[in-house]
Length: 315
Length: 285
Image (cartoon, rainbow over all chains, first blue to last red; front, side, top):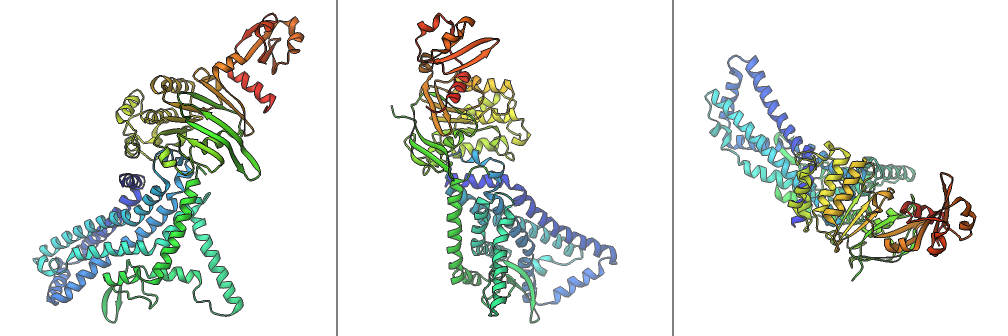
């Protein structure tokens, strides 16, 4: 366990840019956009008249409606973090067992008494737990900072931020929900993570190509066979992957449906799952037959990865 | 005493070529063994098998362990430096020390810092900021702070200038080596290591061409710088190898009576480099 944690810490050192700087930049973008909108308002508005009106009108809404809006804002503003994090994790895993082969430092790492199983576990743990944790910490910091800025603005027009929005929604619940959705999404994405590590363990160069080419070729071939036989191949690989991605239990959209604003897990493309943001709906995915198949696939990918890593030296 | 490395019929195939061809080898503790061979002879392949980095056929035991299946456990007692440039470039020196300390039960931080204090390396630097020689010093400082039973060096001084190379081997010998430790070195720069070796292993085309202690080598082989008029006579005694230097003929003999040779010219102990060339020319016996 001590060694595993040491290896995860090593991953953090190596990928500080991706795991620390990147979420800070995303948070910075949110803060910058907020400040820019404030300055714009202050610039064009006569003594913040419109802003005062907005605060007054918001205050006239029932607390229940305001609570929903605040909650949606807390959950919905995670979207940019979620999407960025998925790119970070994708490229992290693709390089995880490749970079050290390329620069030959694998010969140093393999001279230390850490097993290959432990090494792979540390990479997976970094992708599934450390990355979501790092992004969540930054998201919380961002939202707290935005709440402070908003409160100062409301105070400046003699409003009461506490009764207007601060006291209405429980941010801890929202943060727990976002964190849970990222963990659930990481489990959901295990077959992809396994595949990426597998590619990373053998690709002689350009792992991105090796990661994308096989599924692409299979999808094209399936489309072609479908065309030739003129029967409908419903589950061709590309649509399986697409559905899989959009069924992810991570919060991916703030959508408007039937006159109500709502935040949804994934972008509802299929009717397979309920897309409302609840723990039950996250679990629904994790306990599905699809997930079981996905876990078996991930186990196969990871087992092959381990075999390849054992034999890997510099490429 | 149990051998540190024991191989029987060690074989490695790459497709149809035999990189290592049924090698039998036994290395006892407390030796400094030079594994010497031309490019492509199978040195690195043999080392990779010993370090658990490659599959192989045949029997191989390192410190009583099977390197193929017990690499991680084996690495608690084995250190290796595979040429100079394998330390990760992104890492900071203090991070490198920290991770080694956390992963290696036999690592002594104090010793490492003492070794580093004698170099220009500082803990705040990243490996990529260090010169090639400093990286080698850093790696050696790490390795020398680990209480290992076997140290494997694969071309450890490749590309370093002569000052670093001299220092490297001096440090190794004075600060590290003792009778419980075994060092296995491969290198092309034979002249640099020959005075520290206790054993020689020549490898050629995947087979062992010579395996002997330095004492045996000095007993068995002799070099004769023949008087010009005795060259024909000397040649008749079946030398292993003959070369010419400044018009004088130099012969290398194996197991030839020294008394007979004495009358033909001056006798010397052959250098490892000359012995190596002679053995390679003769081919695998």
